[in-house]
Image (cartoon, rainbow, N blue to C red; front, side, top):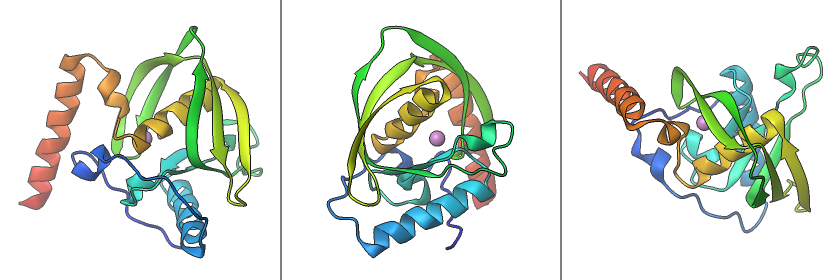
Length: 175
Ligand code: NI
């Protein structure tokens, strides 16, 4: 396994629409392994392949870190070609962050529950109902596969402010 570099705003690759995975090859398994290592190292609870510059519809997630004894009971999950089948009308608000927008957190309102279809690393298709943090996280990560970032849901004022801040930081780093 290897830690890969996480791309950050304003990297244009974050706006790419990722491609479906047709076959679970050894390269895909290696990518998933590397994404877990990268995600745990960051540390974060979810990562989309595009965040390590691979435009493929693959997500890694582990929400256990957010629970009391999660450190000792990791629950790594892989979602390949995930699709939201339905969303609740009821919404909930969570403070979100993103490894590609480091140290920036804002509240985002999303459907409180979603039904998701996805494939696992063995090629098996699953359907699951997500709620709570799981619902928020899977929606956030699926957005990444479509080139959407959580800051896109903020007011124009807040969004422009954060985009400008990261553009400036990138410019400074390049000098
Ligand atoms: Ni993110």
